[in-house]
Length: 114
Ligand code: 5GP
Ligand code: ZN
Image (tube, rainbow, N blue to C red; front, side, top):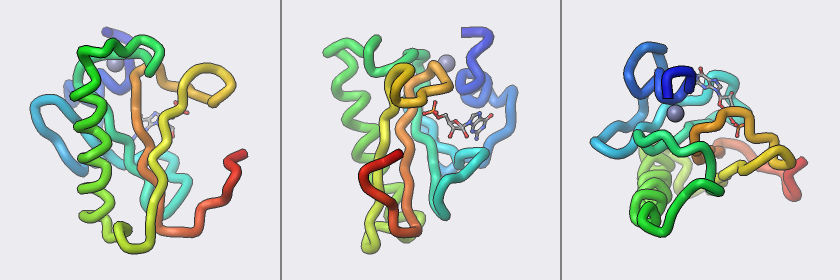
């Protein structure tokens, strides 16, 4: 996707503070952090949202969740806890149409979310 901002980050056309990268996944810190730790974890394939995901991508999405746990450990919030958020569609407030998991922590997070 030529006009996708996260695809541009994957291609290093836009700088980002990369936390983790492998062949399938990229994780980088959110540009407008909502908590002391706010990292976005994305697949390198362009997929607009959970709505577009297919059962064949279950392993990839599961791998992202397991990597979120590892990034929480690297960021030092595994003991205090964290939240992984996957916004999908207009009511969720999803702004970027490249599927991304938010990893949030480092402070007490409110519930229910706003
Ligand atoms: P959404 O609202 O779609 O679930 O979350 C999109 C997130 O991407 C927001 O938290 C926003 O701050 C972040 N974001 C948008 N553009 C950029 C960017 O160019 N770089 C980084 N690092 N984060 C971005
Ligand atoms: Zn994309």
